[in-house]
Length: 431
Image (cartoon, rainbow, N blue to C red; front, side):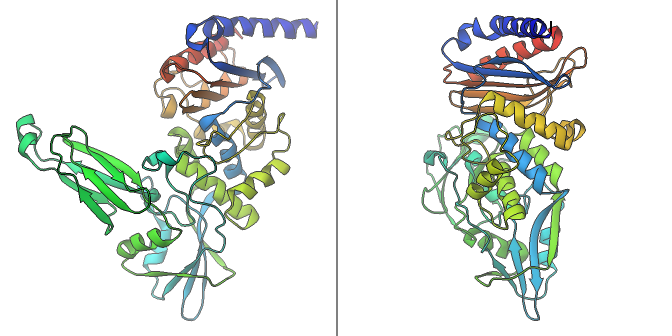
């Protein structure tokens, strides 16, 4: 009887999937994998190509979130330090919140600002590279591919802002815009003589912190452009002006004896998941590595997790980075069911509900608005890839864990999102 009941449920869900997904021309040429798990009954109730590998895009952040929640405790380590008779030695921990506009409170900056002794920073714990494995080189100018670093400042991007006093078209045609950067920089900046451009644009040189700016016709506009970190070099240049003092780099190996904490960990995790922030996800994985292994090394941390806490993946994934920018990442839908169930059991749904976006907010702002909140999920999007994995409460109050991964589609992403929304809405009502 149990077997027949299980078959009946699977057939019912398969019918829902056919009606909303498989029989639609939008997904006709795509590769799709689906897995649904009844968390209350502790059993898989539906699989469709759920043991096949897919590029998951930003669903990879779910795994990085697990690492962060496991190892970063309640508060982020901003830096560690040791004070000697004549010098304050600091060791960074990869904290991306330092001087980031997302956070008005800056305990690390306040700590450094009040120091009277010379400050030296050592990064012997940095073993990673600025760019992740398999990242696309020609995305270097886009804020979604910000460089990683041991001591991030301002989110490792320069915000370029164009403003005009007047809003009339006639005035804009003859008025020069006021353009400035946050933070203020002393790096090379060239302005285009093109006055006919409609859109404000900023292009950084591939190999140096040199920026080419074209004024646009917008009244107000902002562009975020990553800068080349050069290890510590760029951070120390920017900090000299912000702090009003010089921090010197050092190769001295020290054993720090105290910590400055920065932000509540969940406040960073929430932003990371709500806007699918690649930079935060990469730094979270590196910070977790620093806390567990004593070094910031994403490769070693990934291998450690796969050999230990995450050895239970149903299908051994190919895990390349923290954010999902890399197309080298390969996971199955069943892998996401497993990690989401593990997170529910280890951290509890109440906490996860505050971190994962729900309908009408974050990356789900245009979807799942009716009767919200009932879904808590992570999106994933890149060219030809769309994914959604998370938690779904049915009309009867049952908790389902689901993963829908779509690869090699040729349709607008919003169309596929709407099809997945229809599938999950139907599943919610009928199961």
